[in-house]
Image (cartoon, rainbow, N blue to C red; front, side):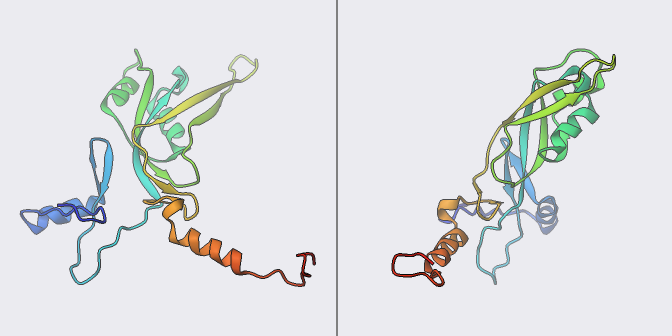
Length: 184
């Protein structure tokens, strides 16, 4: 069931199943995280604000030297906290042959302004020559809405109550020592 505020309600067969799902904190459905919290009927319904969000990310143009579990984990760490690789990426890392055109990783991404679209890595030369700079393109399979004012996922700056209050406070502040023309 879904209410007008965009909150879904799930009914479980037993408390053990509900507790097991709530302990995870979220469930991925078609690559989109659904955050789960036990409902307390004595409190109102509010959507919690999230400072991070688990997202499936494709890392394109990963060099062969970095296409292993440690290398991909380090790349993913530039975006947030790596949680897991998809089966294909993990299989390619375990075997020394072949690689897809991208690495797919589930990352708990932090809200820090805009989502990163590119990573730049430097591969040191083993022969004493110049280092090589490689740009890794970052593709998000789904993107949550995010507020650049509050730095949380779940709402946009256009609907942010804190941003509206901050704008009102700025407009209300008088200029100290200003004359009629606004000069001080």
